[in-house]
Length: 115
Image (cartoon, rainbow, N blue to C red; front, side, top):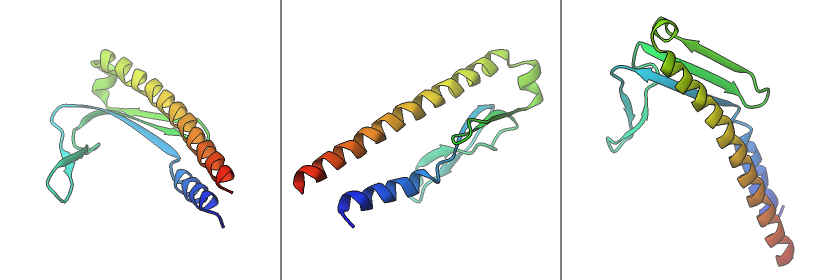
């Protein structure tokens, strides 16, 4: 198997695991997950009681959104902000797919020229 096919097969295998995008809006005190070096890496999504979370299935396009009562009654601006973040998430995914396609095409072209 050529290096090109090995790379592409590995990339497809890893990308197939990426089927869900999660977007979280948290209010209040929250905590971070720390890496082995003690650096804050990512926010713990369940570290505060007031939150709004969306899960987007990247294969089907289905979106599931959950929010606490305060998001329903008090946090209209944050609901709108969260919705805009969902839109940005879709745009980022589309851009990343175009970049990945360009990378694969470049590798394919370089490999073809090498052969």
